[in-house]
Image (cartoon, rainbow, N blue to C red; front, top):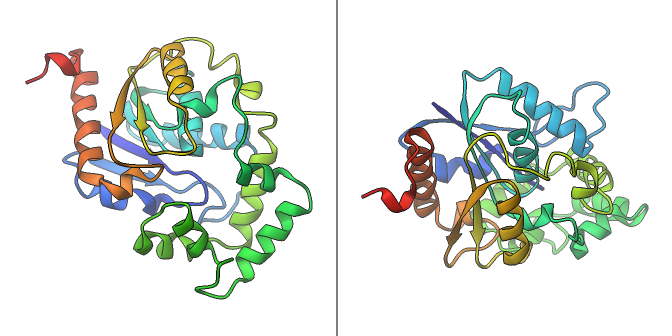
Length: 258
């Protein structure tokens, strides 16, 4: 089996390097179009287009796969997991509260969704001097990304990525559920795991629990970590995922495992 990791915003597949190094299974980390890689001709960087892109990418992987998503990648994973046409053995995601029907976008997202204001942010971030408060690395550090990874990820934010971020967020108003209600209203066809990083300011435990139940997934709380749990404690995250994959493979629950 191959584990396939999907990053979020503003990130690239390198987000998963520390976690993947601790896995005993084969894995790949995808780069979403525009996030460190070119944008295909005619690609509008909308939520629907990214979900469709992920479906196509997965069909090129010998499957079924164990699919893992973070942030926006988590939303794409949830939509793909609900589509039985894609061979997924298991799926795992964080920030499930963002999928809730009552979800309200956070302050930064609303900035990106605002015409003119979002473009001002993009210009300032792309043109910012290294080390300045407006630089992508400084913004990532302020949001909780460890310093070394914030520098590495911040270097990848360019005009293409910034434009994709604005288009993506603007395609998901008032919230993601409004565009994917049919896919998110019933259990997924494969075993699912909703990760709940207890210090994540972008998630809500009650909403996450509700969406996990809707999707037929179980939950796993990650103590002492926030939104970038795969960077803060990659060893624990890798162990949690590998235990879940064993569970998905043989049908046992975690409670039944030694």
